[in-house]
Amino acid sequence: MALLKILRYPDPRLHKVAKPVTEFGTERLRKLVADMAETMYDAPGVGLAATQVDVHERVVTIDVTEDQSQLLVFVNPEIVWASEEKQVYDEGCLSVPGIYDGVERPARVKVRAFDADGKEFEIEADGLLAVCIQHEMDHLMGKVFVEYLSPLKRNRIKAKLQKEERGMERDAAQRAGGRR
Ligand code: K1U
Ligand code: ZN
Image (cartoon, rainbow, N blue to C red; front, top):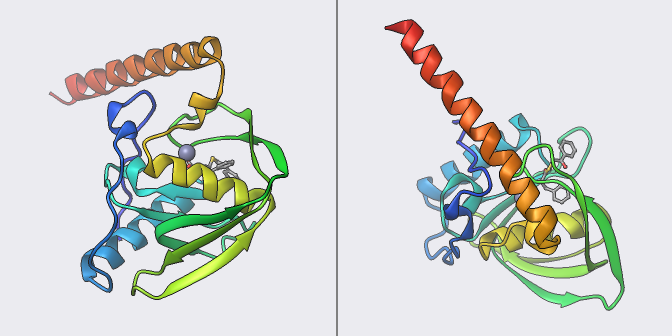
């Protein structure tokens, strides 16, 4: 297994629309799922979409348990029902580190998806799982949660993360210089 690099907002690759998976049960898909799960647990996070690791296919991993004991894998997920009732949840994102803000979404959803072997299943979710499923499915459509926030907040977040990115690049260049 391997840890994958998580793209950081505002990387334009986070806005690519993922394509459906067409081949199930392959070594490639199994490895992608295993690497995504390892990367999600290591971060640590409760969800990860393939888009965030620069793989533009409809694959999501989620585990909202405290002891990281219930990995859920969604391949080609579709929301087949969403409640009228909404909930606001303070969302975070591994691609937008350190930022949490309220997003309103349907409180409950029913999702149809496939596992890595191509077996179809349906689950109904509420609470954090419902939030996380919708957040990750947005990633597959190229949408990052900050796009629900006001342009003012979004631009401040973008500027903060770009500044951090420049700092990280400077540190990396200094470390590489020190090795020469
Ligand atoms: O998509 C992602 O980047 C993962 C994201 C999922 C998510 C969390 C909360 C609301 C909506 C979507 C995260 O996992 S952010 C990190 C986080 O919330 C967390 C990390 C460790 C323990 C518990 C939560
Ligand atoms: Zn996210």
